[in-house]
Length: 250
Image 1 (spheres, rainbow, N blue to C red):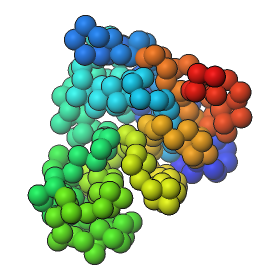
Image 2: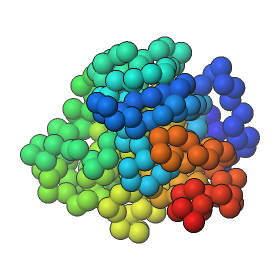
Image 3: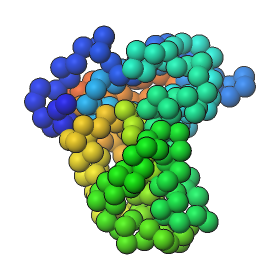
């Protein structure tokens, strides 16, 4: 599987999509947030979903993960329809969502948080996977016995992603991984995403950080009012004058 800056880009066929979303409608009660979203993620891609607050990014993630039930449309993962499945079954299939705001267990140790990541999937390889996470995040190895709630914001984000990796994801959904981080840590976070992808990880990156996301994404979509207003290759969207109008309203 080619890394995001490898060649060629976008050579997978639609029939081989790992994640396929068709006409997705979802929301909360009477409030419709997603209004017919179509999305494809091919093996080995980084696909970015971009947008400002309140446009439906988190609703999309929660619907893909089964936390919110779709009102209409279809979601296929690995060729299996999953929009009727409960979250544990979706995790067991290998679709792992690292949520916004980290959602770690503050009164548990770093190691205990990581172990919970393999509760539904990857339990047999738990010990080996913890070592892989520690190799990826040496600071977590140093703090493995420390309570997660005492970590810095950047370390908590590392822990949240590490916990996701413990489930041996076939697709890793990262919801706002750069949120609240310093500029230096943001750079480290995007470098990490490129590294994971280069090792074969398929990633759906949901972010407000537009230009850095487009710099690493195979393909990208800009979400506006519950629909994709712009879609294309990351490098093409970065040069598209419509991006500023759509995203910034200018």
